[in-house]
Image 1 (cartoon, rainbow, N blue to C red):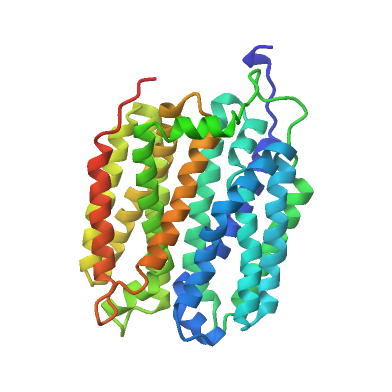
Image 2: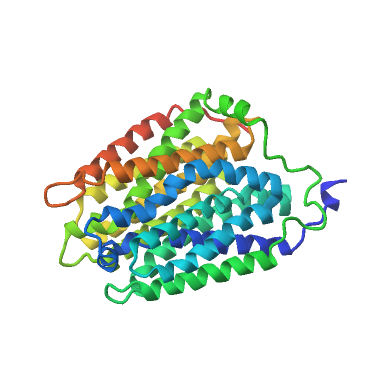
Length: 405
């Protein structure tokens, strides 16, 4: 059967949209408290800000062991059941968070339920694109699925400060709970695992023997450089977005409140969205992945040094935008590059490892730099250390080999 005779169905865009809406929702739930750390401390009655940071960090902690279970279930039971498990968990526990009220322990329990569901969503994108999209559309579908993650984080950073009333988080938790429940129901009702006929004459293959694939990955020095880049990149990004309010407030305590933190965090994510779109398009057009990775990491390095030192609003916003543009703009290009240099290891294996080490990096940076501040509480030492580490990653990126298609 020739590719020309293969039928693709318009319903594929409905399935992709519903997937994106669920992915957006889980990212909003993850980032909920990052821009309102101080009001959250008051609402839950906890003195140490680490209690609030844990509500975000728990997603990264659980992702590491849970990702293997999620991938196995998605592969065994197909897209709707595998991804649907995550959608149901997110719907139930996202809604239950409202009923936790100011009880921190209950909030943590319900947040853990959401975190268990997250890998079932994020690990499903290649299964979705393979089941529903023609071979020539799979990169676009996967890219849009990935982009929805950035959109969700952006919306969570921007909307949350405006949905709370003083130090009362209940209205915000109710709105997000209804959103979670609605998206879960829509997904279960309208999503299908596969179209009536395959979208390609070539079956989509995800897996080889797991241990053989892992051995190939971790004996590939170029892939190991990418592992280091993802460990630093996602780790530092997760740390900054989690700590955004306490990073900004000491720079100008009288002005920089949770609303400003949400705006700056949102601008950083907006830069990431533009970076991902622009760098992916340039990669497809010019096939210069290594060059684009180097440019992206260089932008992230320079802008983070600037962000660490500046205190005025305009400079903070501009440097935050450029940092997001560089760091998150490199992500899809690096994922595509990983596929090129690790063949015949399938895409799901290389991408899964990179995402997992990024979660580990987030845990390391969030916990390791919690108190790495000046006596005034300024996070300058932590930001400088992160900028230096990204500069080292920039040097290493020059050793990545160029791959010709």
